Every structure is written in structure tokens, then in C-alpha cells.
Length: 315
Image (cartoon, rainbow, N blue to C red; front, side, top):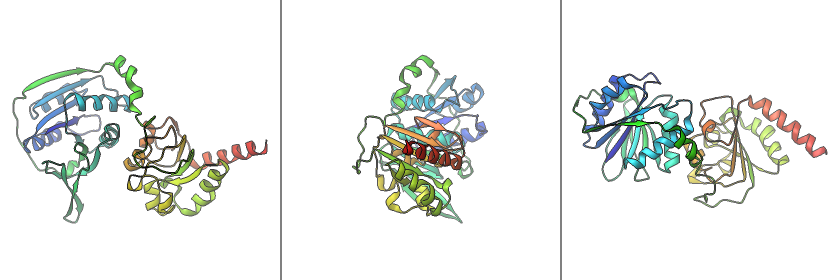
């Protein structure tokens, strides 16, 4: 298999950890590509523990959309079977978004791998317990827990070194391709609903959902819904959840309030025409996926939304 590993020092992970992880990946007998971002010293270290080292200059850590598109292109360019990184604030955002772009499985925070005809992983659950998980697609993305890696040492001369220059003009011309959900058909048919008003875990309880989201949705003539995480918190029932059992929706407008954007939930929205996210958290995945990202307190947003709707209905 061809395995890509994203290596960056922006999140505070040191070179020794990446050296160990690359050595671990090579110990599986696969071809390992180290994609090193903006750090020549880290590049020199990683090149000694990978089959191929690719130096990515000029990557903008704040421009998540362009970075995801760039790695998606590299996935195809090097015919990768998987792409991964050590779990970090940065990787936990980038890796699942790459999986969305490529429409492949994402497995977070694993502790071991068993690559064969299919991708198989071991994930520790605590108290010495573990579970075996398997990718449902032939290619996949995953993150590896930094505290779960034993010491490996396989320093070697890389077969080749590549240097990639980040081409801003190329990215600008193709950035719209990051949103493949537009003009795509949902994988599972759902009722034709023109718009949804959906709540995330930030609403905290069922009562608040019934008092704010449900009446606002009714006034907007749209369907009220919740994310998978909100359903698990008891904010609403399973029938209101978007993303359960690969259930996809394709509305004209999807408004998400107080949701961080789980990978299952975002995947179910790939066919939505327009997505609006309301959240105070600047690191939630919706920030890089939505057409309009509103940073504000959700209580204030819902209050202003109710005022605006009431005013319009009186006209």
C-alpha cells in the first residue's frame, strides 16, 4: 500500500514523534510518503524515515479549504491508499475534511494498524480494552494517538526527495472544487425538504430545542432537525437526526445552530445547496464547510431570528 503521512510542527508535535510514527508505518511493509509542511528541519528528519519525502512550502495553516484541496490532489497524484497524521488540533480538522473531499472512510485516534486487502485498525478504549475497526471503503484517512506508539527505529536513505511549491494561482482557480456536495445527488433518498433548521449539542437540552428551534422552523416553513451528537445527548429523537445510517438530505438551505460538525453529519449534507453555520467556536468543522459562517452566541442569534421572522410575518 501507498501510505501518506502529514507532518507539521505547527501543532507542537516534535520531530522525534514523527520519526517514530514514520518508522512504525514502514515496519508494516508499505511505501510511506512523508508530506512535510513549511519546516525544512522537520523535512530533513522525516526524509530519513520514509520512502519518499515531499516538502510543501507556503502552506497557509489558516486557509483550511485550500489546504484540504491541495492534499486531496496529492492523494491522487501519488496514488495513495490512505493518508494519516498524528492526532493534533490541526490534524483532527484536516484529516476528516480530506476524507469528505475524497468520499472515503475516516477513523480517528487509532493505536495500531493491520493493513491487508482492507484497512483494519485497533483502537484502545481504556482500562486495557480495545476494539477492532475496519474501513468501509478501499481507501481511507485516519489519525494516530501520539501516546499510543511504541518506540521504532528504521532510519534509512529515502528513495527520492521531492519539493512541492504551493501554487496559489492554481489553488485560486480550483478552490470551488472543494465543495463537491453541490449538484450531487444524495446517496440515500430522503423527503424533498427545501430547508432545515438544525441544532447541535450547544442547545444542551430537549426543552430548549422545543422552545426555540421547533417554533422558528415552523415560522420559516422548514423542518427542524438535530445532529447525531445532539440526538445522543437527548436533545431530540432519532427521527430528527441527520446523518444516522448514512441518511443524506439535499435541501436548498440548511441552517445549523450550535453544532461542531461531526464527520457523519457533514457527510450527510454533501448535496445541500447552501449551508449556514451559527457557532462561536472558530475551530468547528462547519467553519470550513459552510457557505456562510456566522460567529455569534446562539441564544442571541435565535432571538434575533425570531424577531426578524415575526416582523416579516406582520407585513
